[in-house]
Length: 464
Image (tube, rainbow, N blue to C red):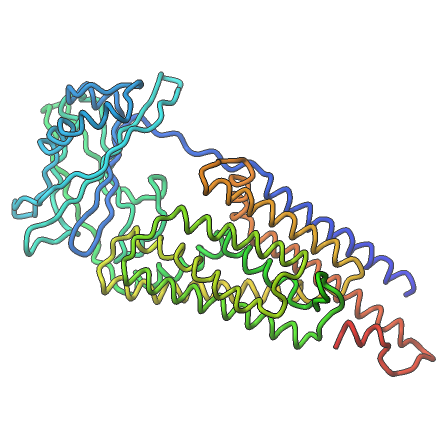
């Protein structure tokens, strides 16, 4: 029995070290490589209540050969701008959506951009991206239509067009779905026997309101789970909650009840702040630029990390969480703004999205709560707290510089760490569990046979 506390202490130090090491490793890990585009056209559809937004991804070499518009690997943005009218004219002649009864849809073309030229095993590849809005006539169904499209395939018979649905609120396809996760609805190619291109009939399932709400709930939960910056801000602000401030230093511990109260008020204030901003921004359709919002969030994390090292606003964490929560709510609203939802869909989406955020946030705080309280009972808790705060401050500074226009590897590594949230929380939970076992074991040693049944002064301070 006499050796048990020593082994627990050793294990605790090991797990605490692993917690810092794992956190550092995840922050310094290289972000995953992006998939390379394939040399065929892609037509991505975002299905809305009254229209369909389309994004055309066209290989520059094949597009130039089919259209006669001069585009190549050296074309600049200025040169592309000069050829915009010709590109739109050509696309309008080869993109004709209609109802099943043959009534023409309206087609308007928006932004276009040239991607960066990349070397592949078969040569240089560059992509032209064009956005368009397809609007059915009165009485037309945006979920069922005929797509007459032969932008490149009418000239390059070996070319294929992959048509996929990227976003569709009614069927639960929402969020940051990309080309790799879109649902294919058909392929357009030249029939080499007849040398014709048959129109593609698009017939999407009806979907339901419940599918949209459920998808938005999951999207809100994922936004917190994978949104490293949002979760990091809340956790770093909660880190010193069990501590007492004495001037410019954290000294001593509060009672467990007081610590839980502070954590609860801070979490609630953050929830109220981002919920208000999310609702006002979404319903007001404010169109706030993303860059200043993201920079504000990075700054909030930096302030929270500094507060975890030295008390800046002791006792006012809830108020600070509410103010900074407004900025985080504006960031959440950017996700809804990109979906171009109708007013009814927006209201339902806001409810589901916010509920998902709150449920996941509450779950993560409950998982982290034992760690936040128990780790401060350790003899060397200040070292561990300082290390966590320093890592957080480094990530926040990297994000801040990146969002002010200075890209850096620290920001990219911090973004990639969002996929490892569950592992980080597991390490924290294991550390807290060992800390609890050590305190309990120490308590039992202090009240062994022949000892007083009263609680020792040290344990009273640590366990009250």
